[in-house]
Length: 136
Image 1 (cartoon, rainbow, N blue to C red):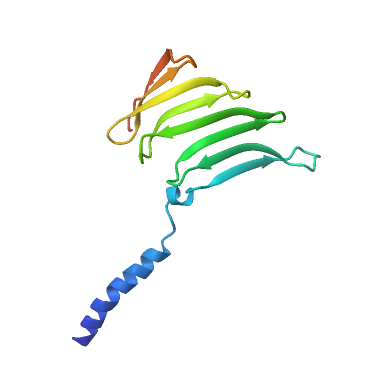
Image 2: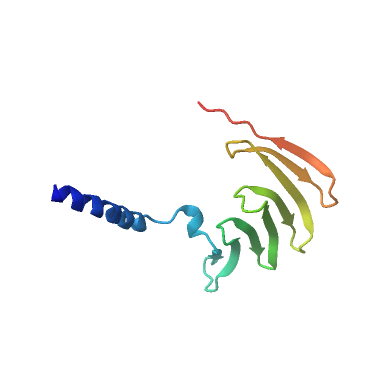
């Protein structure tokens, strides 16, 4: 009888210590993270910045910059509605930081992307992409 009572008190403690050992999920690991990719050409000693990705306090990608030898080659900014984890709008910039394309997204109830609207920098709709999912 005493063994059962002790076990009842220890079970929540064991469960708590096991959950404390669980590694953080993918999104938690990315909170406030900045990832820089550096390249070094063969025979060279100096690395150069190739790509940089920035995540916000919720672990969502908010910016990605691709670099060339002359500096920024392309930049993409990701926007979200509130605390939503699905990107609602994506704005792409060129090497002079001018907008080249704006993308807006719609999602299915299961979280998969259903539509993508591509706009020119002046806001005019350029094209629409529909996503279809089929399972084998």
